[in-house]
Length: 167
Image 1: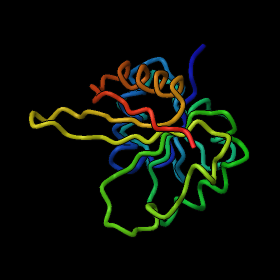
Image 2 (image 1 turned 60 degrees about the horizontal axis):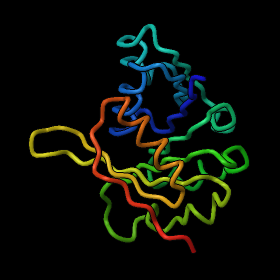
Image 3 (image 1 turned 90 degrees about the horizontal axis):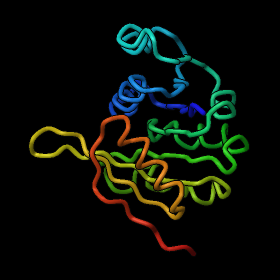
Image 4 (image 1 turned 135 degrees about the vertical axis):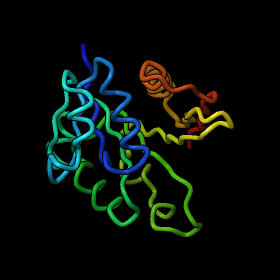
């Protein structure tokens, strides 16, 4: 079965890189964008990819097996609230980027907002040779293993993941 992966934030650095790498593999990519013009490189560079550009967060979240969130701090809470009821038991990858302390994203408690999702924190790190590595952490071992397998299939190298302790 082909996994459907929704990328919220396909126009941001890591969302774009992730969508491009996934598009080269047999995944169904659901890119959230207000306009199809925001995804021209994906559409041109991967004409055979199973790629759909949607403009409704709820529909995108509902259709996807896995959700990737890489949006601005200002849009984070609004997006999470719009997809909350559609991501029960789904893997939700929250891409974290380096931020100043006290920014809005640091204050959002995704575990309490998405209590029935399988939340994974995903960070990308550039190695000294320019390779993009990923690091993941979360509380659900199966979700971590599935996420790691997908990211490796997409061509990323990993730093060993961290299983967080349960409350």
